[in-house]
Amino acid sequence: MTQILDENIKTMSAKVKSGSVKTTTAKTSTFYCDWKITNQSIENNYSDIYWKIYLKITGGDQWYSNAVQIKSLKINGSTIVSSKKYSNIQGKGDHQLIDGTVRVYHDTTGNKELPIELTGYLYSYGNQTGSGSFELETIPRYASITNFSVDKRDETSVLSKYSVDSV
Image (cartoon, rainbow, N blue to C red; front, side, top):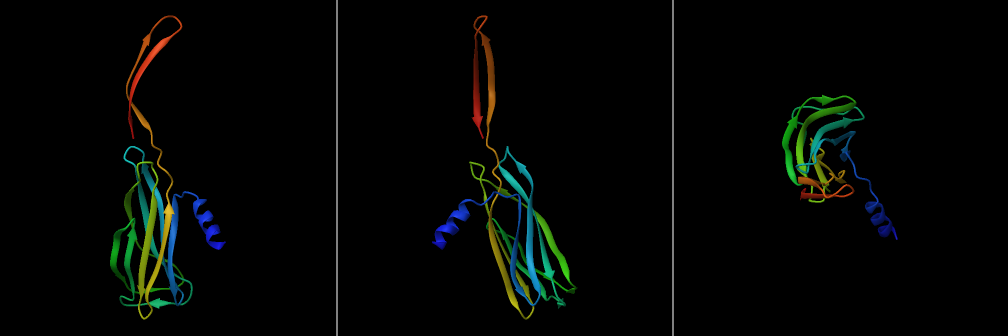
């Protein structure tokens, strides 16, 4: 019964413009990646994704010389960041480590499932991992009218002719 319920929830999930992936927590520190769509191209069928990786500290953790590392950030199956080391991160709060933009292309119907995988490393605690998959807002597909003409037949009727290129 639970499996059927989980499948129904998955099929009813909303399409999104933004999201977040969190890793496991070591001590009181958690890596997370926030992302959002900053641009969509109807003509070229893509979304630009702006992403930021943080280390969130909720306690008194102190990370010194090369003690924090982003092992990898994969978006849509491509490695965006790998082996980036950081030092001297301490104090409660959200510490931004790195950000960037990546372009992802949608399928021919304008749909896109966006998988994100984040692996961070904390000295003495090892790899911290997290992942998620998001259904992006659909990019509308349209027909482009390439040729259009109107011929008047008589006082009450016209004949229109047109050609379209589907996108």
